[in-house]
Length: 298
Image (tube, rainbow, N blue to C red; front, side, top):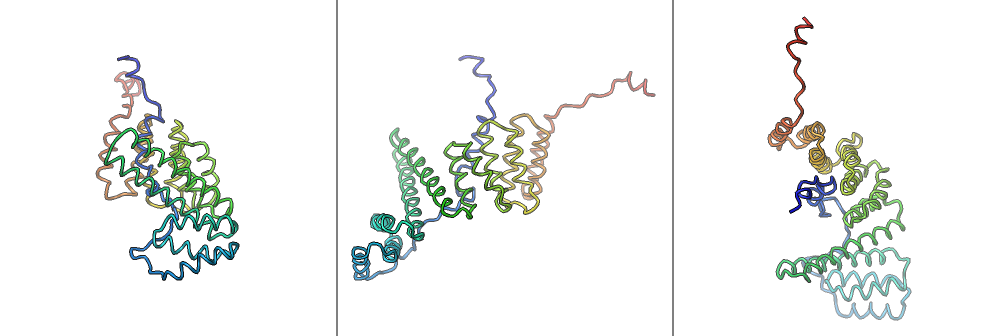
């Protein structure tokens, strides 16, 4: 083994990748992905109603109502293929009808999620190179669908800036870090979103190997005063900041972030204080005055 290679210090981006992987799941990052609501007991719809709606679509294809009602029925009964057929036709004939457009987008996300779930199950039950490849492609497909839907939806509704948080997360998870930061900077202009946007920007900067920029954004995410951040956002930011600061040798900063984390999570304060005590042993010992200098002062 090359001894030089084995002792090379990893980059901040490489050191942070394992830490950030814990926060790659969208559910833990407050992503709101709208999907068709399905009940445990699908409603019973008379066959004649299906036939009526199908006929209305054929006879009056430019009328949006039948598409919306029929697609809703198919979604509630989990007839995904029929729902997609109806919504595809609705998009073609009523492209400006927002409820149909939104239902179509949500269905695409639902189908992409189903493909990912199936790929995860296959990879767990029958591990193979093909299963791993299919899983990777399903993950990429879902991220691309989320990015597409977010961009399209924000273009239609530029006032709904929370969409930018979801978009920023999807871009970050797609390793498009510069694009994610650009989008999240826009989101951070909204007071209600700036802590969440700062957290995601920090994670993007960390992945880019820019620890100082990352620490600055982690600090913002955790310590905004008005409005105060969601406690989960603040604790996540402080935890990640303390680990990153320790990794890059900023021990004083790591101790500070852990002290703030102890205030946010009092039930974990004992464990956090132990970690702080361990870090204090890494601080440089201040030089002691020599006896001769003490004598001269006297």
